[in-house]
Image (tube, rainbow, N blue to C red; front, side, top):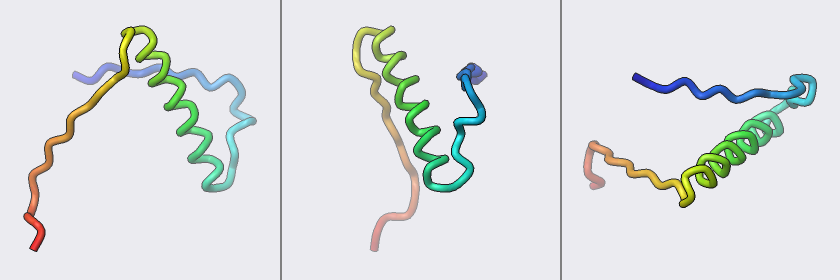
Amino acid sequence: MKKKIDIEIIDKKQIPQSEPERQYYFMDIAKNYVEQLAAKKGSPLTFHVTTFGCPTV
């Protein structure tokens, strides 16, 4: 079961309406969230990706 992440956006009027500024806004929020999790853990967060697909020809 996935854990719900609750991220509070203080002022929704600050969210840009045009792209790519809107995407950069939310990427900054995600970056800050990951930094907070790493600080709470006391070490950098890591990940592992396993893919299954067609080999390159």
